Length: 75
Length: 405
Image (cartoon, rainbow over all chains, first blue to last red; front, side, top):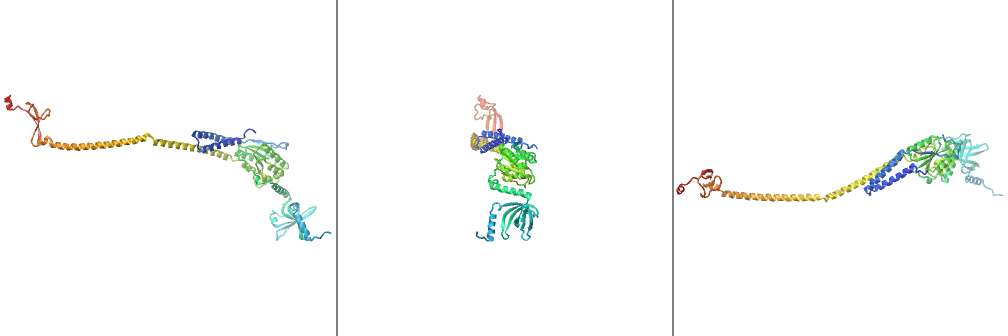
């Protein structure tokens, strides 16, 4: 479970996006920096949206066989 | 020899003894109804409970009797709840009944109520203990029957709403004798797997079908959840023990899944909101920059040499106009002076003399006025101006001059 989950990735990206937006909205930025932040923010938003649009839910089945080895759970 | 007690002292003592007894003061009794009578005027119910070995008289006041869905009949097997006390006037023990249930359901219900009271007293349902759900759960543990519609419904809803979340399914039996242990095992498994939200669910069923979710061990396993837990057991109207313990009770498995995760579109909307804020931020900055630029431009323009030039040009124009006026005035004055001179000249012109009868003699070719005969030879063409015209003439020699020659 060392790989970050989709949610962790999403939250990290979304968190960065929030930070970029907040920084940009403070306004007292040199134009060059603002444009750089804008590009960065747009890339982050794209990445967030891609995750939301293309994520496929991972489903994993856990077994508690040690308790009921004879249980047929494949129904 | 002990001191003798009065009868009423004995009955009072017995009544107090009975009513303060921890077991007899809060008691379920199972038995068969005998001689059930409802007093028409008062509405109170009088009956007996009996089995093969004994009989207990019972009374149910009208206030409790009105809640009976139907009046029991003699011979019904029932479960009665109340307290035991002494009816002094007749020296009879009576069960003062507040609840009367058919035995089958009644037994389950009685056990349920007893357990509920106990767990509540222990604080398992405490509102302060309810935890908020994670905003966006990373890994959701589903504890439910593996083949059921409930699982399929929940997976469908979770995948549609929030495919980002990972789902761990811990299958278990949800009805039957082995169900409680199976549920507890499955819960333990998801707890150990490191989830941040658990859904314990089962589709609808009869009261008996759902009974595993009223089990004490299951309730305690739910209480032990290290992360927020949502229950979705049965239908809207069913409330099981785990519903009381859970952090959040959903009426059905599908609703549990909906409550577990945010809507995909809501997350998308947040991203779009961020995009808009980015756009607005940059727009605002660009507008401000543009305004600064326009300001600078107008400042420069206020100080431009072109303005000076325009001003100077105007001055030059002014000077030019003044000059023109001055020249015009001078010219006009000269013209006046000239006219005066011309007039004076006219009075002095030879014409005036001619008017008086004089003539002016000119050499016709040179136009010179001849004021003397000297140098004028014979045959010189002459032009003689008179008052009203000009005559042409030629000089001829004079007689004495011919003689003298």
